[in-house]
Length: 116
Image (cartoon, rainbow, N blue to C red):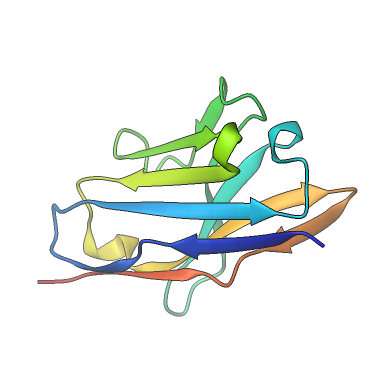
């Protein structure tokens, strides 16, 4: 069974940085694109970044371009999201996501709070 476990969230001041990690199990990690989503207070869940299975191609939401970087280490079944120049509006629960055999899998989420 596919499992995704996120970590790395926390409280950070505006302009600060965090690095989120997501470790996957129960799947051939290197075969699938991976994604990060987020859901802010009172908002719908939105896609933040996607990375291809080999890590060559990435795509970002306009709101995070130039500030966030998605990467992966297939040998460690891990995908990362580097968050830089954080803004209060980045406050959200961040989720790791993968689609395997047409089924969506989600981690439990990690809270990121940007506040002074």
